Length: 407
Image 1 (cartoon, rainbow, N blue to C red):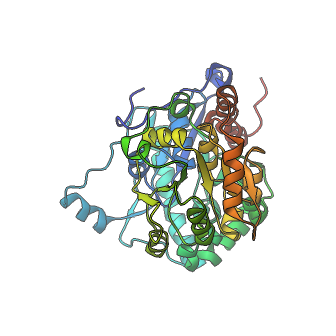
Image 2: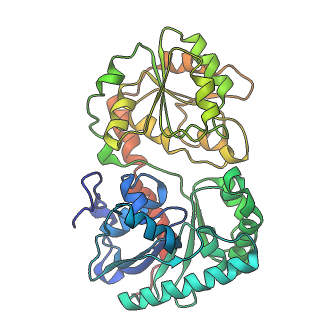
Image 3: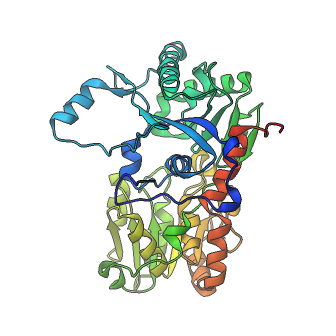
């Protein structure tokens, strides 16, 4: 199957996970707060896009409809005039992308208005699925509003893939009551739920089928990391690395400052988008801190593999308690020693992580991680295979497809 760009590729699941041809299912997948083009442009990095990549390449799917969330027609028109070119979708006779349009940019906040909006979205999905020839498709959605407010009577089992705790995010505070009502309707309908953390499942309290399926890693990215770029290789050791968005909601700036002071002869490197300028301003007071813009997946793997230690200095709050940090899995896939704030989802990843309890010295945790040293290559590869996205997706699809039909 053709890839949509040079920046990412699909890994076919191992033969042991292959379904019989007559067991293949029709599937509808809907994005939330991102589109196909967004996901492909970021190399299908996050949980939802990773699942889409598997649905596109795996033998368990017969027909696949991928649906973007609503987008504003005027904004899309303006982007087209400005020369913006979305990443093309690799459509075929068995695969299609539907891109619903409307005038407004954002969802309304009232439950009644959301019910009308997602009833209309449901009709768009139904028409596109019928055009594709999908027969009672399984619906997997990362949107709490599709899962809660779209009727989907024409579909088979509906599964909400909850990769974030939406009622904890400050940027979406206006929608918190609507998220809670969506969860209530998910419960009332008995819809299936897959959560990346126990905290998310506890919040939703599903009454239908459910599973805890944390995030994972793409083995093809981590089996043979390349050499790090010169900008990283030339930094002073120890090279202490954080990969991810720089947000005040997540990062414990005090822990980082303590670590920068303790390892003043080394380098603290933060690779990722800047979501909060106040965080950057605080970090740049330290001469040994480097802020690096986002890099491609191959470069992420190379700098992780070359780091002396990787860190996750997160604040303890409702949002971080519900996370399944992809970066932790990737740190260990790179074989690095890791120091991380002591949070329930962190403890669930691997016992080799140095957990730093709230109120304790994060710099002490970094020293302990450095003293432990990297994983052996055998342990590193074992971790990669045990935590591959394909294994995670097998679990998700068992929930989404329901119990096998009798022969």
